[in-house]
Amino acid sequence: MTTYFIWIESTSAPAGHSQRKITFAVEQLPAGPVQRLPDLRISDDVTARRCELLRQQNGIQVAIEGEHTLEFIVDRALAKVGQRDLSRMER
Image 1 (cartoon, rainbow, N blue to C red):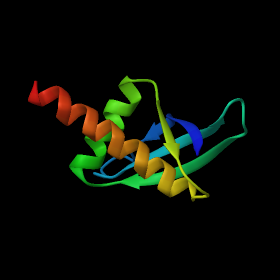
Image 2: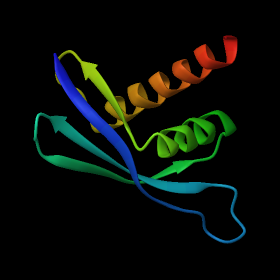
Image 3: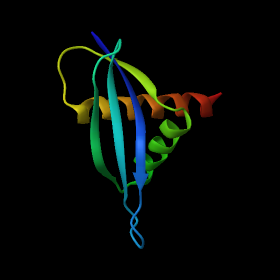
């Protein structure tokens, strides 16, 4: 099992566009290399909300078994943020 810390490094929204571009940073813990997933386009409201929550939390830690792509790791992080938000809303 490998643990990663994922955060949003930068965001941009071109003028007149509904899509935002987000650069995610993924660090393998402990003190592993930092890799970036640049300019990922976010166009749906659910993912945009999860990205905003991730930004507010200054990142999140996820544990993943086996080797996976950066996209998969970021997806797991956003899913975890969504689950936390859903749990908070049910209280």
